[in-house]
Structure formats: structure tokens, C-alpha cells
Image 1 (cartoon, rainbow, N blue to C red):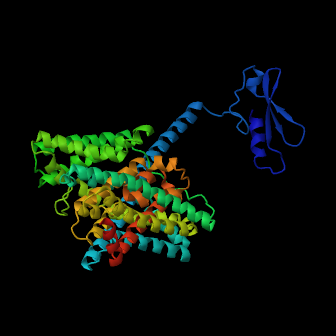
Image 2 (image 1 turned 90 degrees about the vertical axis):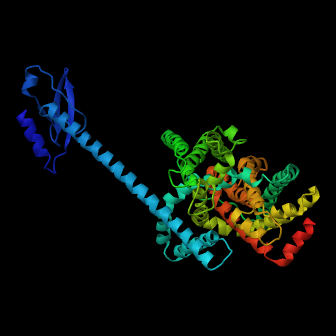
Image 3 (image 1 turned 180 degrees about the horizontal axis):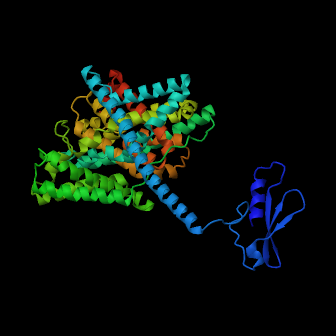
Length: 515
């Protein structure tokens, strides 16, 4: 045996010898032959001579197991144990770094939004600051991509956690206006309310068709070939742990608010935790519904109903009624915020984040600029004048018709538009915009499929031009490749509508149609 080991050792250092070891079995007994380029040398150990079997461990270059197996097993166990501990430590450190990355990237976007808001207020600029921030961000990314492409790519990677966070929670940021809808429409007569609902539903469907078919018609006219969109990252689904965590927050804060109504200083702050958690839980439950049920009961509806039910339950138990609790939900006072104020505080950041989606699809946007801009202009004109015409046809009051003119434009810009007219109802404007978005969010995918709008350009433009933010949130949650086209249509529809209504001749023509 010693001789065989000596030969094997020498073979490891000899470049002239072929190092191939074969285990052969002769008459049931294993023999080790070393092929060294000469006549094979057969080696037998003392144990073989005595008839004891030789254990062959492994294959290939692993031949005889030397030494006790216990030592090898202990080393393996120790290595696995150390590796497991290192893996846990590495996982924890990665989680911490990921959370910090999210906080920093999201914090920068929020800080940018707040800075622009304050700057625009100081300068008395009526134009929405978030839209300005979106186009500035897109311009910076485009310039960097032209000069230093690596810098643009690094910037995109840095903000990726924040973008996925916003995309995951996007519908929540548009819900507060829907939650307080009962307060906004309580002074509207029932007959007028039915007329408004009819105009909204019919107008939404007509606007969607006009925008979608206009995009397809222009493409056929300019003969632009459709190319696939860049794949977009999808946020992770909600886990059971998250649901239980938010449920615990809701129960604890609900009981705390009932027992100590002003424990956080004001009633609005005290109600904030359970109203916010109720909104989040409703969204989580809504996203987990079967697909067939979601067609009729969108997660946004589930989200708003959950918050309203929580407000009703608290108002009933505390004997304060639902209206004061809904008033705590959206106070619109920065020093005394409610749950809705916290959620709507992200709206500016959402709009700014659209710049990154637009940049990722910049080649597609540039390639299809003709159909994008043409269809948005046509859809905006159609939306304003068709609403004025339908209001006159159904006999809706003049002031109410003017108040719902910007039904397809996002809330911030819609309020700016109605302020250009006299005798309007801004609360009704906000409620109508939210209802239009809700109709779009609930039925947009079904209608788009029925109309056979297949490509993301037509689907994105049709959705955002007819249902602004809520429609965008609903579609992009399942079709992130349509988000950049939703984003640019969402922004340009509001911008073009604001520019049109700021022209006196256009305002007079709209008033003439209203009658």
C-alpha cells in the first residue's frame, strides 16, 4: 500500500506521466491500476491479500479514503454551520442596505416635489409644479444619456427602489378624494346627479374610443411600424405578513382612538393611523380578489369602501357620526394632517416618477411621437366640447355643466381650469374627476380588450386621456409597459387642456356650447 501511495505522489509532479487511475475488478476483488504510459502496474494491499475488501470512495480522481470518516464529517458540518451563519448575516445586511436605498431614493423625489411646490407658490405660478418637475427630470436624463450614457443608467438604477415603491402603492394616492365623495356631493340634487353620472360614463367611453382610434389612425397614416416596448419591472405582491401587520395596526389604533380621542393632539391625528391602515388593508384585500371579480369590483373601490366602513364604524361607536370622521380623513391642513393628506402628499412625487418610465421608453416615444401628440390633442378637444354639448342636451344646470368640463383632466389642473370660469363648484369638479377615474379604473381593461386595442401605445393614451390618474394607476398595475404612454398622455392632456381654457376665445366658445 505504501508503494502505491508513493507512486501516486510522484505522479502528481511528473509532467511526462499520464495521470489516469482506473479501478478494475478481477475475480470480484478491486485492483488499482495506474496508467503511466507504460505497462500497467498492479498494486495489491495487505488487506487485499487477507481477503478484506477495499472501500472505494467517490469516482474520478478521488480514490482511497485515508483517515477516519468522522474527521471529514465534522469538518463538513462546521463548514455548513459557518456558511449558514454567514448567509444569515449577509441577508440581514442586504435587507438593511435595501431599506436605506429605498428611503434615500424616495426621500430625494419627495424633497424635490416639496421644493418645487414652495418655489411655485412663492413665484405665484399657477402651473402644477410636479409636471414641471417631471419634464425637468426627463430632460436631465435625456441630456445625460446623450453625453454620458453610463451616468443616466446609474441614475435610473439608483431610483429603481423608489419607482417600484410608487408603482406598488400607486392607486392608494388617488383614493382620498373618492373616500370623501359623500361629503362632496351631498348638496347636489338627485336628478342632476343622475345626469352628471350619465355624462361621465358616456363621455368616458367616447373619449377612450376617440383617443385610441386616433392613435391607430395616425400610425396607419404615417406607416410607423410597432415595435415591442422595453420590459418594465413589476412590484412584488403583498404577503400574508403584511396583511397581518396592518390588521394589528388597525385594531390597536382604532381601540386607542376610541378610548383616547385626542391622544395624538387632535382628533384628525388620532384617527390617522386606523383610517390609513383601513385604506391599505382594503387595497391589499382588493388586489387579492379573483380576476373575474376585479372586473366589477376594482381594488380601488375596495380600498375606498374599506376606509368609509372604518369611518362609519368609528362614528357609530363614538356617536359622532360619519361626516366628522370623513372630515378628519382629509383636512387639507398641513399642521393637522389626516390619512388622506398623507396619501395625497405623494401625488407630486408620482407625477415626477413618471419621467423615469418615459425615459425608459424614450425610443418608443420618439418613434411614435406623431400618434401620441395628435391623439392627445384630438382627445382633449373632444372631451371639453363633448361635455359642454352633452350638458346642454340633457338639460343640466349651466353652473354644474361648467364645473364638470375638465372631467378627463387630473384634479390639480382641473381645479385650475374651473377657476377661469365664474360660478363653478370646485368640490363638484374634484368629485367628478375622481368618479371619471373610478369608472376608467374599473372597466378600462375590459373595454380596451373588447375594442381590440392591443399595443401599449393605444392602450396607454386611451386610458390616460379618458381617466387620468386613477385609470393610469389601474392599467399600469397590470401592464407596466403601458405606463410611459399613460404618463405622457396624463401630463399632456392636462397641459393642453389648461392652455386651451386659458385662451379667452376658447372659453367663450365653450360657454356658447353650454348655452
